[in-house]
Length: 384
Image (cartoon, rainbow, N blue to C red; front, side):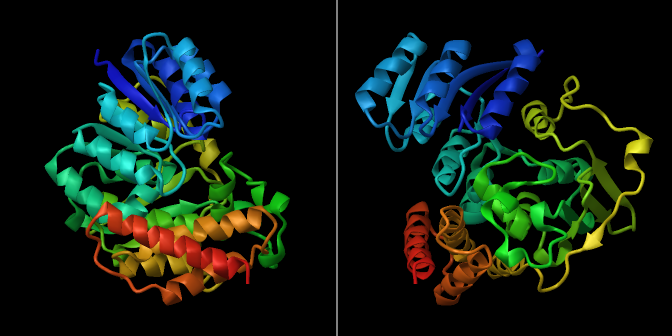
């Protein structure tokens, strides 16, 4: 039996917590050797006491010395780091063969590149890694390392493709539940509470807003482009309210393969750790009766401007997706803080994209500069 040594980045978030749940159920198949969190010190200390990792890291702390002392007490003998860049430090520090990246936002890119640079398996839930830094990730993968997606749609696509080459694929279709506003014609005036009431998934605030706008699905098409080496003309998305079928692949011979499972993130998390093996049940299985009455509906043209903007940025390429993502992070935060209406989120993104002049991706430093520019531009636009 193979044992995976796993470092979990974003360990106190939704993906991190569920990863540790999967690890607990996996028993001796998984050994947690590193934990990194953003700012939830109490929760990280509890995790450190439970797992006793070799390294612990905290990105933000009101009192760095006090946080360091608490983490040292929680995980005696562990290497401890507190401060900016801690997740990347932990990635480089630990003897993990697998790094689960559950960090939210563009901040996860540097840690992802460090994991691949070290020849590790990157179990990726941080979608910005590929959206923002797809070309850099592909360069790293060419030199070693491995990338497995932690995302219901891309995990499904991986299973549907079955290691078949890209030239055999006629079309890859990702599904979208439609989010909390899928049946609401006046979605632009939806309140924060209405938007965050997702009918299927329990996720963080930003991704839940992006799901309601279908912006998230546009980002997933960009990810699929880099993950599976497919051009955008062979990538599609559709609405599937039941959220049981997560992706479908149509091959050039006319055959279509679908992957179905209950909407439970523990399944793609476990698969990213076990692949190509399949371990014991991570989620309750489906039977034929569960698949009765499934609906698949095209995404209505023009109804979801954030989706259209994301797809256009992906097709444009270069630094365009980086600017797109940064603008969205700022606009969504402004909506969640009550500063702008939901309908203004895609308007802020559109204004930033209108001003951005895409360049070929050359370096992480270049992307960080574009990210900073787009955030400033979006912030100015949101406060006009």
